[in-house]
Image 1 (cartoon, rainbow, N blue to C red):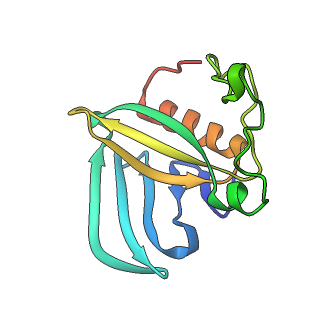
Image 2 (image 1 turned 180 degrees about the vertical axis):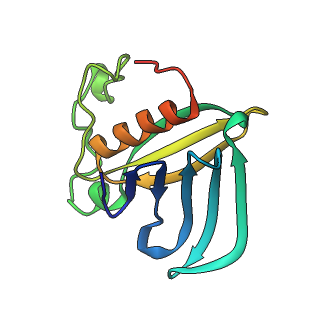
Image 3 (image 1 turned 45 degrees about the vertical axis):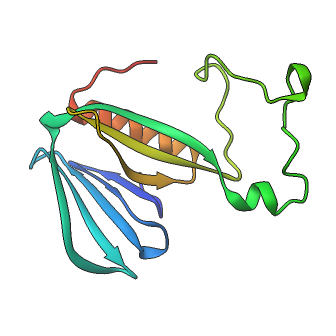
Length: 146
């Protein structure tokens, strides 16, 4: 599976930064490490972070609305599904409803042993976010929750 944001092939998962500036993350099955390389306009900087697979305790995805989808349409201050009292609906079981796709971004997050949470990448597609999360869990040897 390949995309502009992420590539899943063989023993590697590669999450690329948006507009070639940010952290490029590589989950390498053969090294058993997650390598994060800082890039600016596609050029590698000497700042690099390595996280061993054994330190990762959780992988999750977090969905957030893009700034342009909220303010660019002119009607962004109204909730899409108003709940009781006019507030937004709180979804208690997100696995039953499909995740929205247009105008949303999905952060892939890792939690390491000491409780620190690290954002390893952002993807634009709900399907790709789900696939990257499941592949990361499988390769890291973590349980599947849903």
